[in-house]
Length: 490
Image (cartoon, rainbow, N blue to C red; front, side, top):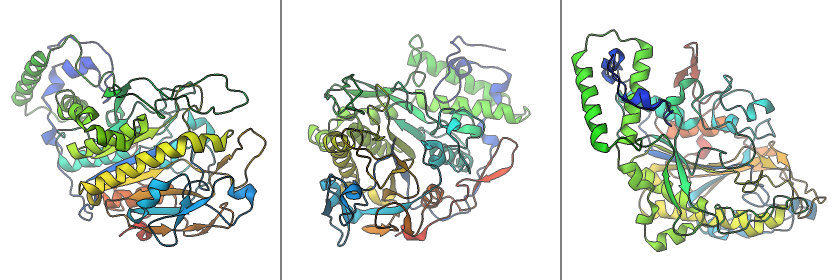
């Protein structure tokens, strides 16, 4: 076996640097052994998807399902405003979003049975969930993240590696910058680490002290980049997603050429499944580290200052801008995660205290500017019709305000909550479902996270009965029990 030098550090694609640079008997198996599988589904309406996840869960009452006629202890301190859609009102903290409501599908009847941080449950087809799974990202009970499923199915249909990574996560590896434990969610589970998102990283400092998670007990002042960054802040590829420092591009290209010669010389080798999987991951790693397009797409400084300002000079805003640039560059599935930074919950929507100050002075203004800019910018560039945009969270918040903590509180609530979608074949200016008079239960048209997934897969061109193999090779429906919901479609 001929071995090229390199460390054992694991790349973001799931292979190690040593595997990336190693040439041996198993290197001769190419991706040509995989036959492209016909999709069997409709022509895709969406070329790409931007998945926006608001960790901790926004309150439906102050966002997309206000209850202006409800008692004060339900409605809270914030009122409702009219939108560009007749009859649709949303929370007063979203004035920019109100102007683009005619491009959105607002779902007021999202529901499931787990009022916990079940991120992995709402991002995958897994049928059940429990609290221990929240902080066990690699537990074998988990199912693959939506972006990983899209990446996997696309690879099977294409039969060869993509020139660009097809599953990218912003702004950093999920829940890696807070002091709380890692959360399960956007990982490939039994599809293998090679289908985890390609993670970016962010280099820069926060410039705004955000309202405390708990005004009575929190002593730390948190300069949270989600609330403000300076113009020097920038995105990079995460560690392991770029060339080793001691390996020049010229040497890398030479090694890749040598590997190609070995591949061409051994067409008759047995096509062993494990060998194929290793080589496929190697090719995926090559496609990332040798591509300049991904780095260019992440360079938001190439945009005009007016465009950057339009999105907001916040980490969330610039992540949304980078997501738009990535889909323009050809990335199929891009995720923007707004997750904890610093002391537990410092940037999260988990408002168990200081609810109204955090919403008024931080969370709603940042979301409103960046979300409205993303949808408007995609529309202005003629990209919205082919870009599916999903904005959701793991649950909603209680209809009854807890007046005990300073600033008020709403706690976990999954019986009914709101999500908002746009583009890629979703309806425009439509309200789907409703909650009861206090926003505590579904009144009509319940929509599950699995239904959201099934509908998104449909718009991305996958048949409703598409499957992925579990660890024993048994076929599992990609959206679990989810069904395509025509109420959401144009």
